[in-house]
Amino acid sequence: MKYELHHDPALCNRRSYKRMVKGKLRTFYDPPANDPEHLVYLAEDDHDIRTRVRGVGAQRSDLGQRRYLKRVARNRASKTAAKVRRPKVKRAWPSRPFPKRRS
Image (cartoon, rainbow, N blue to C red; front, side, top):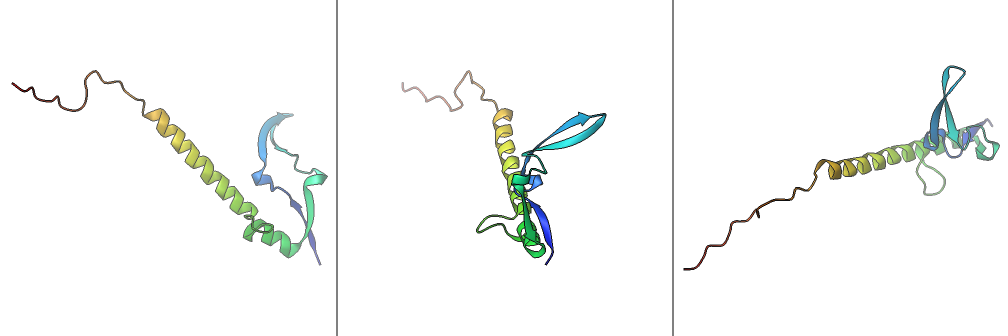
């Protein structure tokens, strides 16, 4: 049986940042990509299932979790942008018509 190394959590789901190292732009992850505490050997079939089909138990797959986080970030960004775009304007006069006077 063949085994493959699996990053747990997947690299696409980790916080990443880019730095210039010796004139080249490199990507670093938190936790580091090759940290032995976050590497797991899985059978070839199990690795494929966990990455693309479903996660452990009732969790999402690694790629499904990435899509979910992108959707959540997009929805949060649109809600905050909507609040910023529409500033409340204080009106000098009420927007309703004035009641007629009785004589």
